[in-house]
Every structure is written in C-alpha cells, then in structure tokens.
Length: 597
Image 1 (tube, rainbow, N blue to C red):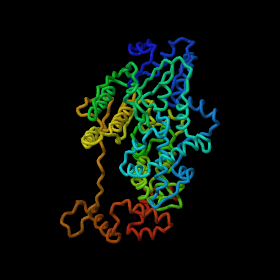
Image 2: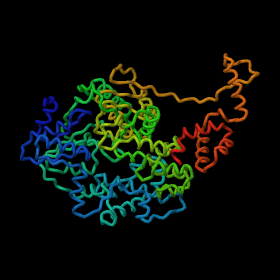
Image 3: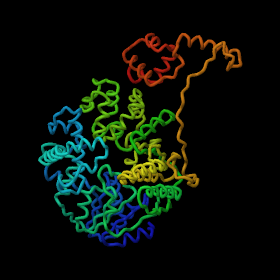
C-alpha cells in the first residue's frame, strides 16, 4: 500500500493529535496503518461511529492480523461497563410521549394537550442532559435548544415542572423502576469517570461526538487521536458537538479523496464556500484522485424523509420497470415518527377515522388542527413532515406504501437493488457509484435570504452551517456520477461529464378541454368525422355536466368515501354526473379495489 505524505506524517506522530479528513480520504486506512505501526504490546482502542463501521473495522484488523486493537462504539463500551454491572433492562428506542405521560402520571389541565406537550419536552430534556457533559440537570438550560417561538413560550411558562419531572424520569431509570435508554447508560458511564486502560485511543467520526462521550475520551491518559471532517457534522439535532474545532490538539490534514474525481471535489469545495455568507470561512482544499468508471450502485439521497418518499413515489410511478429497491436503515422508520405515530395514523386522523388509529397519542387528538397545535408547541419536525405527506397524497398513501414494500429487497440482497434510497443521515459513511439528489436541500439563494433576514437578530449559525454540511455530505457519497438539481449548483460552474444537471420540473397546469358548440364559428377540427365527434361530446356533456372537469382532491376523497361505503356504480355516477367509464377509470387510477377490497 502506497501512503500519501499526509498519511505518513500522521502515522509518525506519537502524541495527542486531531485529523481533519475530507470525504473519501482514507481515514479508516490511515487509522489502521497507525495501529499497525505501533508496538504489538501496545493496547489500542478504536472507537467507531456505529455498529456497521465497527463490524467492518473488526474484519479489516483481523485480515491484517492486527490483534492488539479492541474495536468498540461509544455505546457498546458504555453498555459493558454499566448495563451488566447494574443488571438494567434496555429499551431499543426513546420513551414515547404517551408513555412518559403514563409513567409520570401527568394530569391534563384546561390547556389543550397540556400533558402531551409537557411530556414531549421532558423527553427532549432527558436526551439533552444525557448527551451533555453536565454533572447535574441543574447545570444546563433546556431553553438553549428550544427554537420555535410557541414552544419557547410554553417551556418558559412550565420550566420548573419540566425540569422537576425530567429529574424524576432519570431517577426512575437509575433505580431500575423502568427500562433505561441507550442515552441513559452512556450518560451514567460518563458520570462514573471511567479509566480505560489503553495506551492509544483512536476516535473516529469525532465531529459528531456527543459532549458526554467527548468528556470520557479527553479524560483518558492514553495517547489520543481523534479523526473526522469538520464539514460532515450533521447530528447537531442529537446534541453532537464539533470536537475537531473545540479540542486544542495539533491538527493534521487528509485532503486527497480516493472516492471521486476532481470535478466532484471542486463542486464540494464550492458548496462549502457558501459558509462565507454566515461567518468567516477558510476555503477547503480537496484533491479528487478517485478513478471509477463502472456504475454498480445508484442511490437517491434526500435531506428529509418527506423529500425521499416523494422521490421514491416519482421513481416507482414514472419508471415502472424498477422492480428492486432498497431503503438504507429500517424501511419502517421512513413511515413512522420517533414518537411511534405512523403515516396511517396521521391519515386516519386527517380523514376523521378515529376508530382505525392505533397510536394512543394520535388517537387522543380531536382532529389534525389539534396535532398541528401540538407540533407548534413542541417543535416536532418529524410529525410536521408526516402531515405534509398526508396532505399531499391522502388516500393514495396505503397503495404507495404497499408498492414500496413489495419492491423492497432484504438487507442481504441490497447489492441487487436497482435503486437505493436514503436520507443524508443514513447515507453517512456510505459510497455509491452514482448519486441522484432530491430537490429538498437548502439553495444558496435561500441561504443568502435567511442570512439577511437574521442580520439584525441572533443568527442560528449552527443550523445553517449544518444545512450546508448536509449538501456537502450528499454530494461526496458518489464515486462516479452525480445527478443534481440545477437550483443547487453554484453559478457558472464549469461543465462536467461527471455532473449531470437536472431541471426542476414545472408544475403541471390542468385546464378544462374546450369543445366548441355548433354556433361557434371557430371549429377546431377540419375533418368531418372529428366535427361529428365534437358534437357528440357536447351532447354527452349536456347529459353529464361534470364529465370533463378535472378530478380534484376533494372529488377523489368523496369517490373513495362512496366506494368504501359500498355505494353502487349507478349511485356514484349520479352523484358526480359523470359517465360510468369515467368512474371506472378513476377507481382504477386510485387503485381503490386493491386498497379497500
């Protein structure tokens, strides 16, 4: 293996350092070589970002017969030290809002949805504390992470009770009265001030470290190496901190990307220059030395679940020959909110079908307006996106989800998928031969506008900075081709056969067809048979007044309702004043037989 001069300089150090590595720069290779060149008697800990990276690293170290390296994730390390010792039961997810209401016995008040809004903030406060480096709940201010105006008003008015109930919930986990979360045992691990008996600790993906884990890392006596990419921090919403900027270690660079060509490297650098609109920014040097021509995997990457679902629907309806698809991560996570509510629950709430709602929390809502009010007071972006999907696709949702699941291949067959769908967060650490971006990323035009709007107020630098990082991470997943909406491209960027621009589709305008009456002098058809056809259509239209109006969403909803109620075709035809053929065609278009028979 031929190493670059940058890699050699890193491997030759023997003190605490931080490595700023651009996307695809071989940081894992560098870490492995660093470990390989240490004495065989040295005890080395390699902290991986997640379980899949941990598994891959273990395989690579084993293949090279490097036996003195222990590979862990932050959570697996904490789990061994805390869960076994205290005999805790660990739940796989965070507590749902409705569960917190029940556990703490929160009573409702005259304020609508008070108990659920309060419980939502308690859950978020628990997460904020567990990921922080604070020793006590009293040491941090939950208001620091509340952004929405209505949510802030609620939290300020109820701060004392939110903080008190947060401490009670943490205490119940600590005593083993309820199952603990993954965040909790990581926090308890940090608070125990553990001493890890290693000579070297190598911390990967350091830009997304939680303050709790970073606190553990910095207190160790070992030689410490932390590596990551300052511009790949995209987990601020999970309270990650950019440790590469905060740690005062000598900095080393890895600026050569072996993943992609110079075209993609230049584009990535240009995207990062947008940070100059919100703060001082030093240009990033990226050298693209990757040489990949064969396309073996195509991924569609979106910023949000909503953007990804819209892209999946577009692909599966317009390109019906696509038979095998794969969603990175658990496919159900794209149709469920973190709080347990599903798209189907939101849809049934929207349609007023309370008896079909399964989630206790959603079932407690009177209507969609109440859920929107709840979202405004909790700043719950996941639920907000789900409402957007429901409003856009309405009764088509069951058929859409069914189609997606029918074409989805299991994890073991991922390589057989014709298209891989992923949000940026789930694509982190992945690479694909070709990448297509959804059009839901922040454009430079919008960034400039937001920066100007907040010029005289407190600019949320971290949030806007992370938006730029999301686009940078998405672009740098490709090894070969990039299909990108033209609205996301920098102005006057040179043409490249590796970067294919996609025009933003114009919204289709639906107009009523014009059928001319006999007395109209402007006859649109020259042939006699066409004139006769036009006259016959006029007669049909007189009989069925709405026969040629475009179908609206309200009409589709009513048709679905009548169909589900078992109304006869004759009754439906009479209701809409349309032909039987038109009704049959619309029923087929909406797949009502498939969904509701």
